[in-house]
Each structure stands twice: as C-alpha cells, then as structure tokens.
Length: 126
Image (cartoon, rainbow, N blue to C red; front, side, top):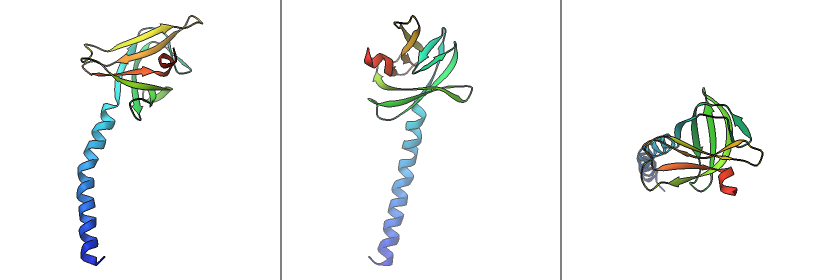
C-alpha cells in the first residue's frame, strides 16, 4: 500500500466512525428509566425501601445486566430481559410479586410513554 492509499483509508475510517458515535450515544441514553417504589421490595439480593430510583441496563434484550441507582449510587444489581409492550405504557408502573417468605419482589418495570419494559431475573425463573 502506498502512502496516499493509507491516508485515504484512514480518512474513510474516521469519516465512518464519526457517523457511528451518535448512534451509540443514543442507544445508551435509551437504556435507562426512572420509577418509584411505594413499598419495600427486593431487586436481586437487595431489599430496597420505598423511594425514587433509576434503572439502567446494558446488553442484548434477552440478557441485560440491570443496575438500580438511587441518589447517584448503584444500590442493587440483577439480570433481566427487555420486552416490547404492544403500545407505550401510559405511566410508570412497577409489578411486584409476593415471595414464599412473604416479601415483595420486583418483577417488571414499565416506563411512561415507552414501549420497552424490564422483566427482572426473579420473574424469569418463576
């Protein structure tokens, strides 16, 4: 390869990369949503008190790593899946389930005006 071909290849790669960066930034922005717990509930192995939280997730839709954040700190982690709803959720909603030891476990989180919902790992095994 001569010097001119190398420069052309490098310029082409830089040009292509400049178009892919906004796509990655947008994807990571959509992989989060806020929700409220109105009662104590378990996420993963952590019992969370009532309050306002943010769920953040990464990975392919069928196998995401979920972090629950409160006041800027990760307070719980678990695995889950992203499911598509038939229409956008009309509001934020958290579905909980009673466990055998009489505690609540978060099963699903729906986000206002979004068609994607998080199904957490405890719900996947039941």
